[in-house]
Structures are given as structure tokens and as C-alpha cells.
Image (spheres, rainbow, N blue to C red):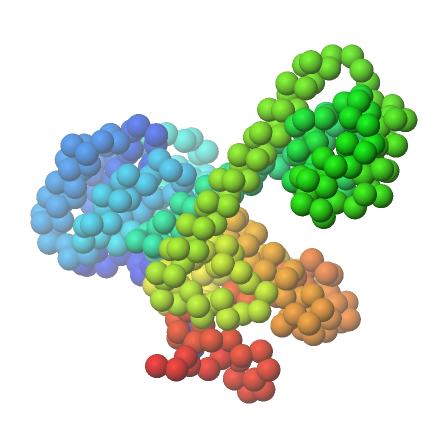
Length: 419
């Protein structure tokens, strides 16, 4: 693509007004600034529809009064509290932008030469940041992309919850049956969870007897669990050093954790099926899936995090969104090292990092590039981050041009899909 520079928000001109909003849970603070520098005092409005309509009426009144053609609405990057308001404004003729909280924090120190933070000061500072051009356009996902964002967030929460319960289960098993995880390497396997739910203590296993214990494991695993391994686990139960006190309480918690892990796993499976369903409704999803080493769940997560790749004009805009844009600190003769800013969507960086790990494996599409960087002395983690940046460029190109990745193509890495 010829234009590689990020398009910054242009400064205020004779036809533009800035609407800055300090987002809160129940109360927002709005602030207007016209092209001639005239403004109105920050005012509160509330997080419900009637107040939104009153706020919009004030915007229109100010716009007509100052003969303004373009309205830019800016806010700090925030959590879910801004979503109802953004959904309301997305249907209006405005341009939505967001500013980095780090920018407002630093500029706040200069405003009035004081670190003072008030509801009346914050929206003014946000407007100052927008005036300087340091704001990025907000892409609000719609349709299938919006569903993918919600599903990605739901899956991430479920995975974190499941991981926490797995760690807790490991701790309890170490107390009651330390040898269990030495034999059952994967505590979340179907056989392991069944045993922990029904025979969590060494005494429970011994009471079954070796033959019946082997039959139980063979039935649960559908013949996949080796009989020699079952014998090893039985012998470990006979010589176990696990404690025997407080069994009833431990049993109650172990059953709760096992049920929770199974429940979260079932929910994650349902979410991934929904992801696959909505992914088919994204026109360019198959283009991204043509990259070897990237699967449906990852592609669904990438689209959910970005919203729509095609609405971005340059790759640098998405780099900033992901926090993968580079910076360095140099002064005089000192030349600083380049680092990624990490001022973006953390989950987007996480997804790209794991994609990079998949592609640098043996026979992976980025294996040779990764080895070249490592052999040059680049630290392994930095090499993986560099691969992440390169993959994001490829993904952006594939999505925008509706092309498919060709691994062994010498001159062009992509070719247009047949019409």
C-alpha cells in the first residue's frame, strides 16, 4: 500500500467543533469547543436515554449557533461504561475518536501547572489532546463482528476462570493424593476429572481393588487408558503420603472445582461453535484463515478485537490499536533501543503473540525468518514480537485486498482469490 503513514486527526479548523466527554459509570461530563476557541463550561449528563437526547440537543444547538459542519466527539479509552453512549452517538453524524489516558494524564500536569483532577478539568484536557491531533478513530464493530467481540470476551473470561479453578484443584490434590499428578500428567483429562470427582482419595482407589479400578478407567477412557498406567496409579495410592484429616470438607471443594472446570469447558466449546458460525459471515475471514498456523478461534478473536480491518486506512493505525507500534528513547550520543508501546488492546497483542509462536515452529511459515533474527543475536521474545508485527501486516493486507496467502510464492506472498 502506497500510503503508510497514520492519518492523525486534523487540528480544529473553521468548520469543526470538538465535543469532549469524561466518561463515568452513572454521570458523564461533556464539554464543547468551537473553531474560534469559544467553549462552554463542562456540564454533567446521565447514563440514560433522556439525558443522552438532551446532550445531543445541546450539541446541535452549539453546532447551529457557530455554523459548524463537522463534529468530533472524543473520550478516553475506557471500559464498558462508555458503550451505551457510543452506541447512541454511532447513529449520529459525528466522528468518534478516543485518546490514550496516558496522554491526558501528562497534559493534565501542564494545564494550570497543577496535577489537579476534577470533573470540570478532565474534558477540557481531552479536548486539548484532540486539538493536538493525538486521537485515533473509533471503529465500533457491527453485526457478526460485534458478536465475535462479545464471544471473544466471554471466552477469555471463561478461560481465566477455568485456569484459576485448575490451579486450585492442583493444590488440593497435592494435599490429599500428591502422587496423582505424577501419574496423571494432565489433570483436566476426562479420566483424571472422573477419578477426582468419584475417587479423590487414595483410600477410595484401594477400596475398589486393582482389577475393578482398571475396568473403571478402561470404561471412562473408552480403552485409551493403558492398564500398566492404571496399575502404577493404584500402587501409588497404596503408598500415598496424602493427609487423611478433613476429608469431607476437601471432598466437597474438589467436587465443586471439578464440576466448575467441566462447566467452563462446556461453555467454551459452545462459544467456539458460535464463533465458527459468525466467522462464516465475515467476507474476508477465509483470507486470514489461509495463513498456515492460525485457526478459527484466533481469527474470530482478531476480528472481534479490531472490529473491521477494512475500515482502517493504514497498517500503522492497527499497530497502534494493538500497542505494537515502536518507540525509542534517544538523546545526544545515546541511541535507545526500540520497544513496542503496549498502549493498545492487550488481548489483540496476546492473540498475535500466540499466532507468531505457531508460525515459528518447524515447518511454520515464519520459521526461517525467526531463525535468521535469532542467529543475528535478537532475543527470542523480541524476535517473536517482530514476527507478530509482520503477521499483523500480512493479515491487514489479506483482509483489505480479499486475497489468500501463498506460502511458497517467490515474489508475491498473496494472490487474489478467484472471482
